[in-house]
Amino acid sequence: MIRIERVFPKDILALQRVVEETYLPYFRYLWHDEGKTYLARINNLEVLEQHLANPTHHYYFASLEDGDIAGYLKLIFDAPIPDTPFKNAVSLDKIYLSEATKGKGIGKSLMDFADKKAQQANAEYLWLRVMDSNAYNLGFYVKNGYKIVYKRWLELANIKEEYRGIFTMLKPLQD
Image (cartoon, rainbow, N blue to C red; front, side, top):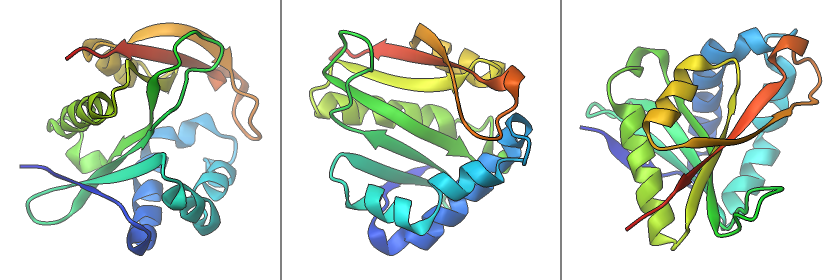
């Protein structure tokens, strides 16, 4: 059984640890510096404090029965999809799992949870971004009802040229 609980400011150090533990194993290959610059930018205490204080940014931990945190989810409410007519939307901004829990249904549980939260917010769409080189997650998102809306190229420091492609994907929500 998976327990999904909201992350609050008191949990910031656990969040910072989980972000690092769940990002690097999967995505260090994208970066010339193995993701150190990117993580320093998105996972510093000041940024996490700002996100946790923002009422539209919600982080959630997925915990196992023994209390170990298996991963996390970040939703951004009231997040129109840029450069599209899809305005009433929630962004599934982050969904990361520990390597040890991959393939155990936790990702699916988090996806279902995101759907439910977006529907409760009366959103019409849920959307996310995924690297075009990430075939495993791309397939997972398609299997969960997402369709590619467009592709763009990331202009981030230290990202390897061949990995700059990123898809924006959309899932219409229904009751």
